[in-house]
Length: 465
Image 1 (spheres, rainbow, N blue to C red):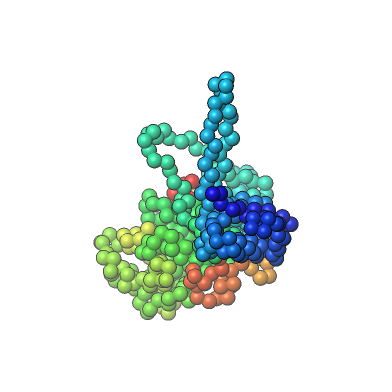
Image 2: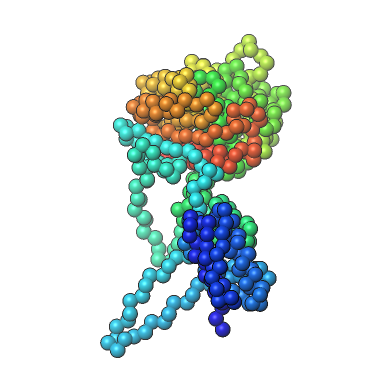
């Protein structure tokens, strides 16, 4: 006995649907303010049809803006599951002995994920004058006419017995967009669309968890104060630790007289949990330090990262280049990455060490003339004295209240002329601007997504595309 089928055709931009109900042999008009509301009405009608008929029915949906064609089965007890694929018709042989042509098999019906406000809003531009290694875009948009699609790589020959490769995250149900909402509300296990923003984020997470060839330093630097170096350093450290695992990343305050790192992290470090105390307790960096001893001078944060404050209270002496190298040698024994939150003095020894040693230099630039001018001067200096550092620079334009939009175009053009390989744009995050303590769970979803994409580009800068 065939299963009754309720056919639903969506139109009017996802706000209206015509549904053929088999028990009534009639077509109903269904409406909703949004396509999500409309789909809720569709499944409510499907539940009622299954209960009234006392049988499992099939619901075939087509024509949506956010909802691609799908076939689902609805039981009288309101259980919903994907309908089994229909078996292809058996091939018949014509009297001439030729087999009829078979149509290509269609893919599994999916639900499209729309680029909503909750998706990452980091945009990338590449310079037009200086050739640099191609890296994938931080965001799916193309801006300024620059196509950042990586070139195709030749596949290595593999054994015919090798199992097929699995793309990162393909086995997990969707959590974002319309598909994620359908999974949450209806208990389905629909996978994300292959080219959806969610799959792009999962691919970014796979890059972030790459094994590093050696201990790496990531430096957040801009000589101008108040541009958001510390909150960006803290949030980037949290993102790396959240995906790479606990006890892998340390964020250190390398300002020559100490900065605001201890005031922006979720768990405030205790007295003695700072760089001078660690260096005094372990004066010889060539001697091995036990993990437990190192942990006594670090402060663990909720995302699994550790932080260590800079010089506090004592302003009669400053941290210098030797202190920074000493700290890195100790941390490298038990951690993979050191994120350096620098001060505002580009002549300081710690600043110069952090920039020269970094595998990636992240330069936050708010849309203000003074901040953009300071960043341009710094990068111009790097271009003339350390071109190799310039190749590892990532400029992050951060949005905020009081932005001057005309600054962005002039800044990007100036950076492009200097040969900066990557310029990204971060969305406005209220917690960054408020001066509050930061925790990854408190950040807005689009900020976390943008940080994931930024962390991906940082790791690519360190390891290569």
